Image 1 (cartoon, rainbow, N blue to C red):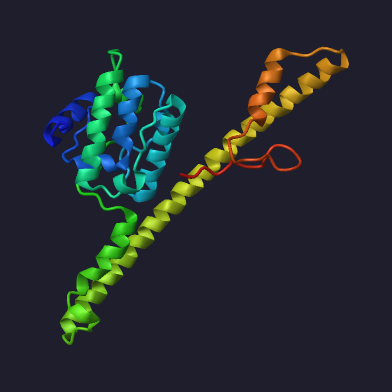
Image 2 (tube, one colour; image 1 turned 120 degrees about the vertical axis):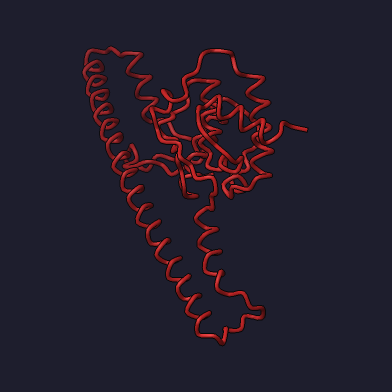
Length: 250
């Protein structure tokens, strides 16, 4: 038997200085990421959206967490598809495991959670419904009859239409938000790729100058190895360095 929901929430709120009221809120992935940061102090908290409200944001948080598990060689599987649905039981069981992991691995150093997340807002709503769930569940609110029969009453039909329009409007707003978020990610990608390209050119020029004199530099060689390194399942296209980021998947 693990710790109760109330015990876990009290511990979590104290550790991270947040105000979660339901264990389901952990389904955003943000709290799990910062628990790990309290242990290792090297989690990229700027990439963690503490007030995530949509499933694509939850998944991005869990991607950060999966990368940490891989880097730290933590062999516990992360049931992302279950956790992002923000169901109580799934998140309770995983949080119980996280608490045991923290008890075992926390080294006891001081931890400032607000500073580590650079003051990000943490106002995750107490009731969360992932994007996919809302998209399918909301329109059904006006279809209470069995057998798929259309209600005879014009009032009920009008109510169902209004609900559908409201659902469409909500989805359109979410799509706009996702597009804005994606545009920001693409700009960030291009910014860092440009920096890497400048470093690559500088290293190449230095190495060519050294090669003319029959010399080489170990540090430059190591930098070049890092620039051209790849992950399993990814190959550098013919012609050199890829002109964009590789796509990571779960």
